[in-house]
Image 1 (cartoon, rainbow, N blue to C red):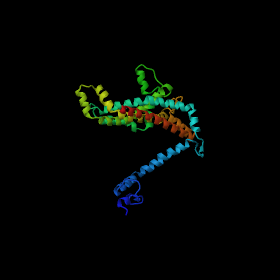
Image 2: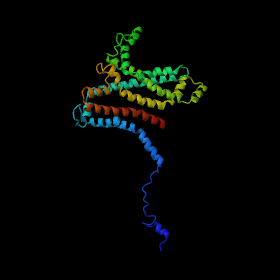
Image 3: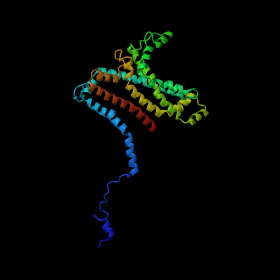
Image 4: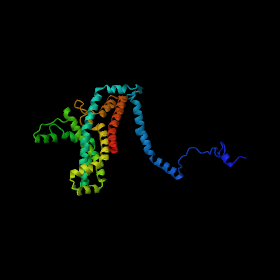
Length: 319
């Protein structure tokens, strides 16, 4: 007579019989599944909009970058021809060089202006900080066309207020928008003035999140404002600097509206950016396949440029 222990352990016995259960899966209650369906229902309009207006255009643009696609014509597959022609085009490298100068000049100035404005607004010595916040943020929400018209008059060679100040100081007039050496600084000044208010709001939020105990301890130790700024404020703002730096670098790599409105890429194409070059390819010459290739090359450049500060921040935190 077989013992119960042998029966339970034998193949095909009680221990060997399939239980009908697969791999262990987390058990979700009915309420959890209902909440999940409700959440998906609420975000479904955003998901549909994201798929229709972001995901599908991006995938279609990637496909068109490998085709000869002109308006009112059927796309023809050409492989990497658009990329090879673009990399052999001197105008593209000119635009890329201009964009690099925009980034190198504009990003430090923009971050410095944003931080200075945030320190001023957040200072306890400032009266009516709400007025300053509104004044500094107003250019961000102001129409660029109206702003460009005002700045064109400010930069006017004969009647501009900036040249008037130069002449009052005994300096010569500058042809800001007609001289290739000065057109790019003029665009950078406009871009910094137009956009620094956005980063200022981020810096203000980060400054208000710094514990007041750190400043009180620094004052007890006899620290000056510069020492507080160097040893308390700036170290606490490192994550914010990373965020603002990434956003600002990406923004200046995509600079288009300012040179388009102010100089139309001139003089002598000194203010043509990569995005402006892409616009010309797509909407001036109707070569949408080449424009798509420029867009994805710009995407790779921005991805590489923004990944560098992230890696440096991680290495600094690890050390």
